[in-house]
Image 1 (cartoon, helix red, strand yellow):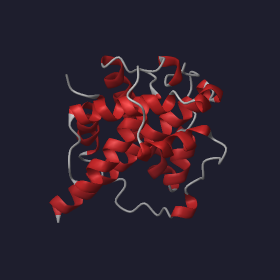
Image 2 (cartoon, helix red, strand yellow):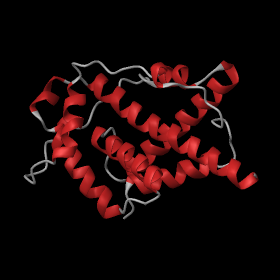
Image 3 (tube, helix red, strand yellow):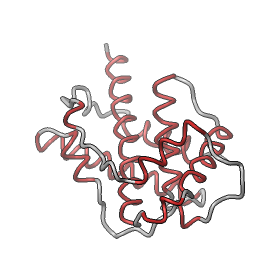
Image 4 (cartoon, one colour):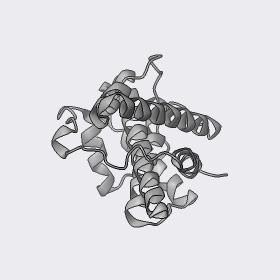
Length: 192
């Protein structure tokens, strides 16, 4: 069985193949919004480097959410990374299609509305693109189990479904954008 990470990565790389929308995104670090410092997800994410216990799998409520019925981070992502109506429209389309591709793949894996799956996808995508090494299905699943453990931390009890959904959208959205930029760069290199 293929992992969500590999299935969605292939889907997104295929999707972005012909679109060089991201060739020159004029975004600086100062334009990327900061996450609130009191957000418990930030503290939990920092624990990844320290590892987690190998105990029983946490209750799914710790790392899943009930969707609100609308996108919570889409407009922020589009407005942060897009300039002008044409680029914003292309980014919105890329993100919307990427969200759908991830949702479909995650649902097939039994990981619908799963923040741990989205964070795993984010980590594995960026690791793969930065190192050129593909994360194996076994590696993705091991990382997923670690992330599940992180989301079982006591701080997560205070995180609302809307906050989990926003974090999910940010993880998936940033991965989709990164894959889109990588795809555009590969296309530009191929044409050069």
